[in-house]
Length: 136
Image 1 (cartoon, rainbow, N blue to C red):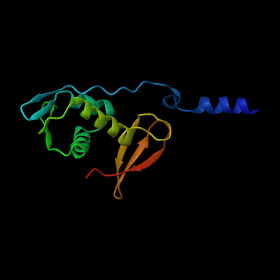
Image 2 (image 1 turned 120 degrees about the vertical axis):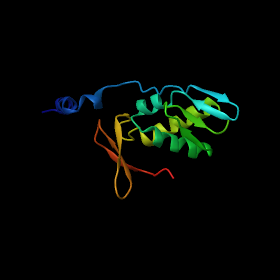
Image 3 (image 1 turned 180 degrees about the vertical axis):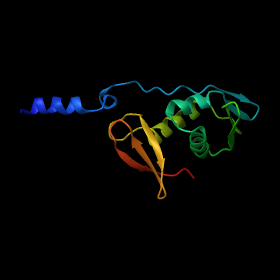
Image 4 (image 1 turned 30 degrees about the vertical axis):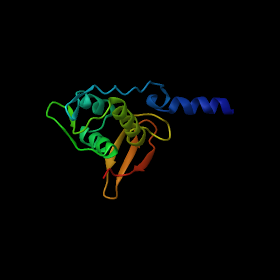
């Protein structure tokens, strides 16, 4: 077999998710400021889109913003300082790059696996794995 035929055969054996090109667009934060607090109303929707728990995403954002906050029962988040939505969106993009995106294939079909020695990001599209740091 020549190279092109082997390449086509290998491409056909790849999972569909590894070959497909899709647009990954994280929903923008819907927030408003009430007094000295910032309320994010669509936080659960964003976490669900990233396939991560709201608690993990919030922990990252609060650490990066160096401010306290909490998840309310409705899935919204209260941050106890005035934070512009552009800054929150930047932190969510950073989170996605670190804890969602596969460094090998660039896909976002990943899951976090917590183990005794740490946390691993496993890509469901290409099978790659890499260690990610703990959010402290």
